[in-house]
Length: 403
Image 1: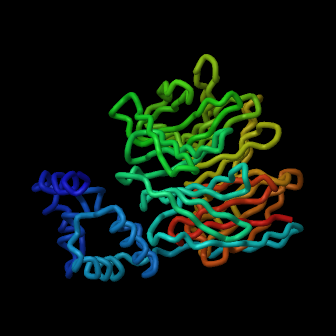
Image 2 (image 1 turned 120 degrees about the vertical axis):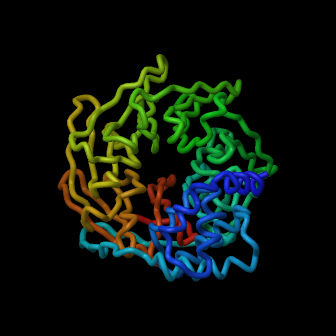
Image 3 (image 1 turned 90 degrees about the vertical axis):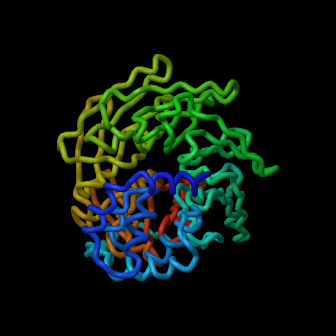
């Protein structure tokens, strides 16, 4: 069905493709990139550019998704993209000394091109991750290093992760327009389709203290609530158009807090009335992408577009920001709060960094991530207060022991 959908899209683009092709360099592989690739997503995405290793990983990701390309064409496409769309200049990682120590333990994900997206610390000490472009979930036992993967049918695009009190793993099926639930004991998955068929991209999810599951849908521009006992799903439209609700966390009082990546706003939901309140950040160019909550429920966010770390006090509306160490193009992304400090990654610095910010002293400390990092989109904190990172382009998951 996916191959047919992609081919149908391509056949419906007779007037678009000639104009598109004029914007791409000539050479072997151009025709496939401007026709077949454009059927499943905008071909212009390739202009972002990658290193040769990055393009090799991207090709594996596309093969995982059964992109309708003849087997013999893949090396041609890879050579074309590597030659014409190299990795753009990236800001060098800035390393700053400080009082903390951080040691990395890293596992390679078994399935090449898996694109591990979100990590999650489970109650039993294991580490879970989503293999977004391999259509599977993975579990790592840090004690033994054993990795087990759970294949999911029909490539649902698993994205965000959460665990319920019974140890079941819930995930956003980003391509299937559903919320999924995996029973690790049996490997069986169940799905809860979103009630609006036009909203098909559930993104990040977390449980509140009453067992209700909250999630975002970025392109659908809604925040959702799922009651596991009944399967009832309620979709709550975000007041601002094209706000693109993205990262989501739950306060100590059970209120979901959401960063709106399409605009300079952060929102919170009243869990009982479902009313949404939005906070506007001072700079119109701000684009908060992920967030963490301190023990006082103060919101810490990464401003991906401007290269800033920000702090929002929802009781007063006060906002304070600090430029990220590697500069305005460093693209701060995954973030967490643990051991009295804010931790996040600069996803475009080369290599990627792990950044620690001391809120009391307002001082940064940084480490370069072994193996380059590429790209830490989200973080979690385990039961010992250590950090979990998933590296999407590097196909790895890391446990960072913090002292």
